[in-house]
Image 1: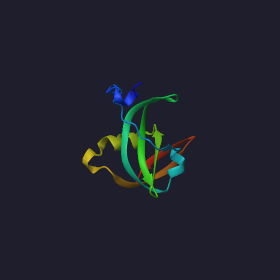
Image 2: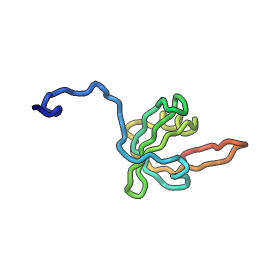
Image 3: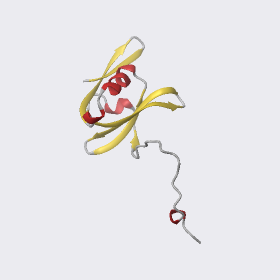
Length: 103
């Protein structure tokens, strides 16, 4: 009997994926992180249009979802050749919500 790997079949799912632990954005607030990459417009159980951010902190890779326009729009503006980059995520309370931004 052959192993699947011996059949020569390649999967058709070409989605980019980050194989690391998922954290909450609040876990990396006020920490300098290295943003490695991101995936825009991800659909989650919490809604459409979120960005999945792949980062490194203290040598450990991780990922978090963000629906903050201030984060998503900045990520879209960073040229691909400028990844990875260092940043600190700051959080400012605004009424009942929070405003996240790279600094």
